[in-house]
Length: 325
Image (tube, rainbow, N blue to C red; front, side, top):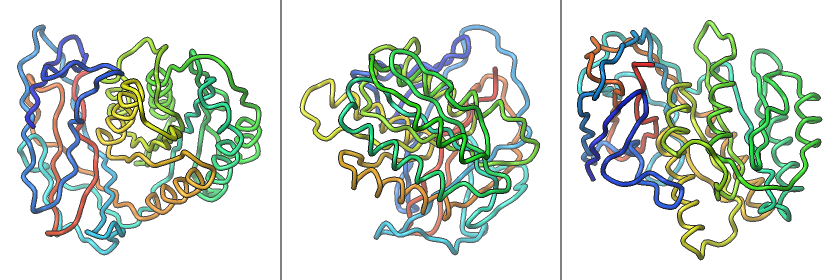
């Protein structure tokens, strides 16, 4: 499927379909294998003059699996072909396997009334995940809860005791502002004063039924892409029956796919624990790539990324990056 994309006043508008919680489109981020043809994404010139900010380096996380879904951990840079809106990078600045880059994790936890009966084991699994994934030197996490509005419960810290207290202090009740919470998480990750490349990850635990956000799905996705963050969704919906359920499921998949992440099942206590274990394994198996982009064209506010590798492998990565502010 081919999408036409227009940018006006810094807002990403998908013109092929209406972007809403009820009917989000297929994501711009296309999971590809070397045997697949990648759909093109066309950009129309902006309706108003834009100021283009130079992007000095693009940082990517790659998750690579084989046809059996097992992580591939022995690729080299020579195995990959990177394209930036149809142009090769000006320079590859780094390439790391099983990357040890510092982690910046935003835990975004749904505390609305719709997740009442699942909440206790979600808290338990989230805290266990942090204890396993955060390394004592260099890694940081923050905690955001959301019902009818998002709240930064614990700013970024490497202190596991503070993070645990924040998670255990959460209470439930209210509506759901999922997109606002994702935007807040991305902005908080981007605000951490890092001078070297890091891995920014948003772990969203929700049933996906947004009904109170002040921004749209595409705007939340833009925040995440600008922060170069990958979204993993632990979807706690146990059954998808209504159109609302289907729309919520599509929305969470959109957030994950557009940023190079994935959605995982969290309908039961066992599912939640298993999903966090899968995220943990993936974070340990990722590749990190940095490159200097080619000469930027003033009319492109969003540049698409395409990466191909050896036949038979699957590469997940984010859709692209924004140039203008």
